[in-house]
Image (cartoon, rainbow, N blue to C red; front, side, top):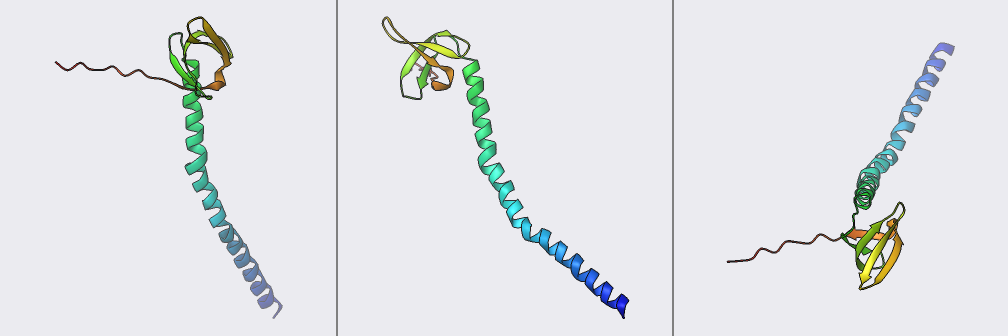
Length: 110
């Protein structure tokens, strides 16, 4: 009689442990989906931005996070000197550069 009770108790304990893991499966699945939908694209954008900042050269046209469009005059270690106009220069940190402008070549129609 005692062995039957122990076997029954052991079976109930194993079943409860299995259900406990299954109860957390939706939360684990949500975390994995959020990782692929939110965190991975953000990391990719950060890497692309860092690559763009490292490739800055004089004469490149850039847009700052404040919306200022300027031409790069000099690239330093942590900052960039921008030409805003005739005899007007401004030094900004590299992380203040939002994007690099790409000039499109216009095709002339003949």
